[in-house]
Amino acid sequence: MTNQADQPDQTPQPEKPEWDGPSKSQLKRDSHSLQKMGEQLVDMPNGKLQKFDLPEALEEAIQEARRLKSREAKRRHLQYIGKLMRTLDIDVIQETLERMDHQSQTYRKHFAKLEEWRDRIINEGSDAMEDFMQLYPNTDRQQLRNLQRQANREMEAKKPPVAARKLFIYLRESSE
Image (cartoon, rainbow, N blue to C red; front, side, top):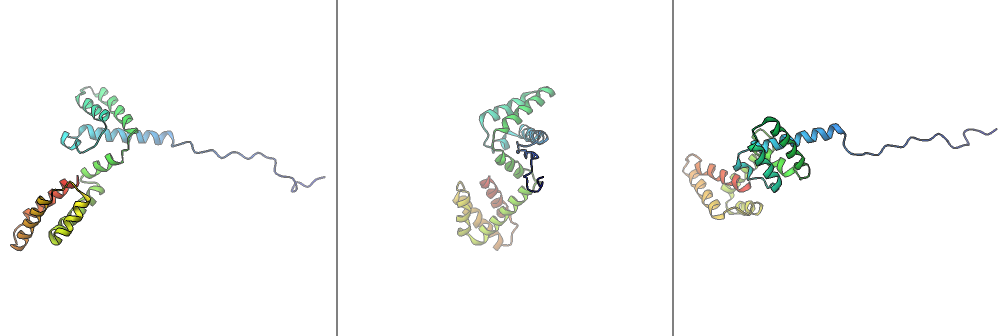
């Protein structure tokens, strides 16, 4: 008679299932969020839409969706836009949308950062301008310098900060 402790366990161990991707529910949630993002792009004015660097096929689909009158046709076309967006890197699109949404955390952080830049440029002058221009090389140095000088003159004369507001607007435009 053999001792059962001496024999190896003969019962088959169930194999651990390998992860085979996200669940069907997760895929559906992702699809719906892409459709909602596509709907935001369709409803957006052309001026704001130009701030996005979208592939040609997606831009054409957005323009087509704007022309559609039938509710059902528009719904199907939004599904198509969502399908197109699945193949794209949507992080940039999402961040740009959040920057445009005044309620989002990203917008508030960006706004606060621009306020810091404005204050630094007014107080520190050319050193801060150089730092800003390294981050945003398309900035016009001369216009930035003129706005900075005007803001300093207003502060010295204790006038309302009209030039400081203009400087902030210019910084916001340059950062976009």
